[in-house]
Image 1 (cartoon, rainbow, N blue to C red):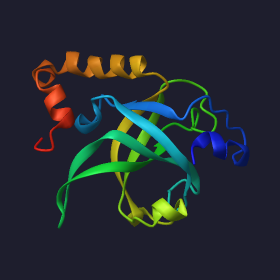
Image 2 (image 1 turned 90 degrees about the vertical axis):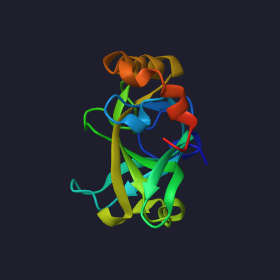
Image 3 (image 1 turned 30 degrees about the horizontal axis):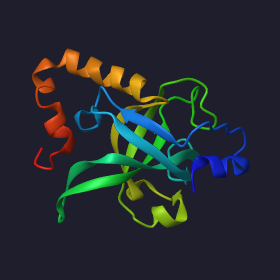
Image 4 (image 1 turned 180 degrees about the vertical axis):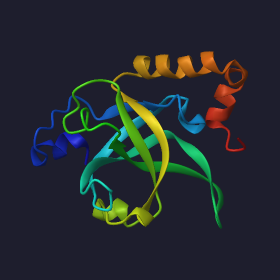
Length: 163
């Protein structure tokens, strides 16, 4: 179920699309633009600010990440929460939205859509959620302009699990 179908159940949500774009200038694994599909709203009950509402998302391409005991795996599902109270996800008032990207450590979250404590997730990155690919690409390109040594291999890094 996309966020558009959830909208009647979340006060103040206005959704024009279900596909967004995620990138970051602060976390290397998220620099390349990734398609970000909203799956549904999620409550983070273990958050230090009390209950905070975020979104369960699926990104493509996924992120290759080292997980103890499992080795290098591709992660596709994440929880995103707004970084600034003044520009949240419900509703999105201004683009881009600065977000925290959380790795899911407890797979039950995918079913319950609820995070009950900090041990269920791990804050992996700071990123930006964009409404268009072009806007996200511009942010991504700015990172590579600031870090020219990384730009030569950016597409290889984006799709190669060996990086």
